[in-house]
Length: 434
Image 1: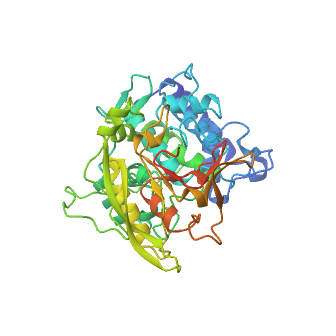
Image 2: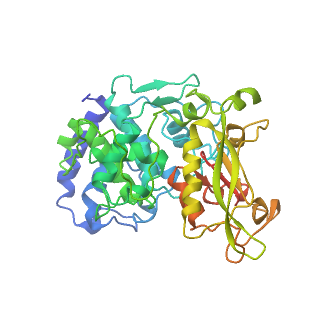
Image 3: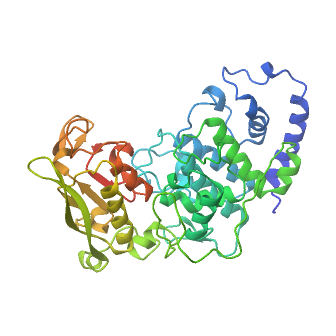
């Protein structure tokens, strides 16, 4: 592990202040109105001393969900403590809803792409799987594993996957009871962080990937990552860290892995979603209609239709999708078809080449029953469709129903969950949230 000059100073200060605070009553440790939970006091104090958390961190309750913006401030502070090179924010702001320096530095370090194209959602609560994805990349950055980090032509840091999808699937299934709840885009990173013991479950072998991360949990996860990667910090902190490593067998069996609900495809590994979508890890859109057409595939899916009498009957629909996601999409609709709801689908579309940036142009956005699942702007104006009435209309998509669950399982996102600044598109699912 590398020793950093800045970290030497932090370690010296850490040792002095921990010895001093050991004799100070707990009520005097902070003048702010908020205190961490009892279980978190020791590590939160270490976070304060090291400089992971800002001085005003305790102005908000420690048990409150941390926002995406505040989390990446902790992450950048952690990277600075380790001695990582922190890039300058780009001249062209990557997000339309924030110009925060910490967020833009995290973007340049390849730790976040936002929640949608050009959207970061700074005030959106951060989930455990979002945190694991970012901190797994931080671990890779700190460990400086051979050929694991590269720079894109745009100057953004990129990371090779720390394990393949089948290894991640095996590990999560072996050691956790809710691995089927981890989004497809987060599985490898969650498995990586979990395998080193940097992140632990919440009890009963539950990872709770969709659970909101509290402010104290976010700080401690950042501290854990730093301590795991820097032996000098670990030894000097005088804080107890337990990294319970989860071992992988030397060879993962080649036969299909049994998963609680459905198997997630693991035949091919891409370095990032851009490469899987367009074939180029630095390119997030096809350059022309012809290029896009060559990368599409037509699939046939089973769906439920409603007869004139209201009876649900089996029908077939064809859908043109990105060829590298054809299997995923087929399985998504098969799960919807086999769901308890027997959700009826009368209209569904995916690929449609358009000028400008659009996931429909990439074959990675799907609209379902557009009339009954409108796109409504924040102003209240309906931009597309007629209504959304899931309590009374069988074609309207329920937020907690089979359709949303099936798409989420394979890493696709539903527009109303993405906190778009312009509104909610209830018909729309996409791989990248746009």
